[in-house]
Length: 115
Image (cartoon, rainbow, N blue to C red):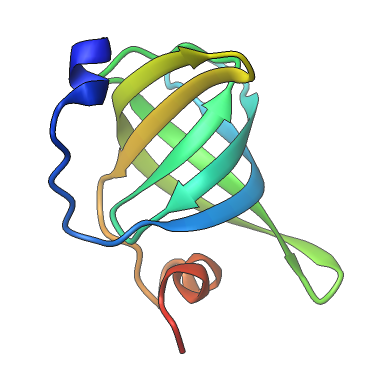
């Protein structure tokens, strides 16, 4: 897996630092596992989690966002493109099935695009 992680990365969208609580679900398995985002772009996200999804696995991510003191959830689906074990947990790179957009994920879009 390290070969995938260390491969030259060609990104369509710029990643920005983004720290947020999240949960990751690995269909068809029931339930979810806690995660924490470290960066995000319109096309994907970097997460730290104790889950160990295999590269190519489908995932569903629920981001827990604080908006004016209230928790809001935005969900995105994608696939795991890389996994690397780290001291704090597994670092997982996820490519979204569709780029973030203002209609479906307005709160996440606000984090990656300067208004």
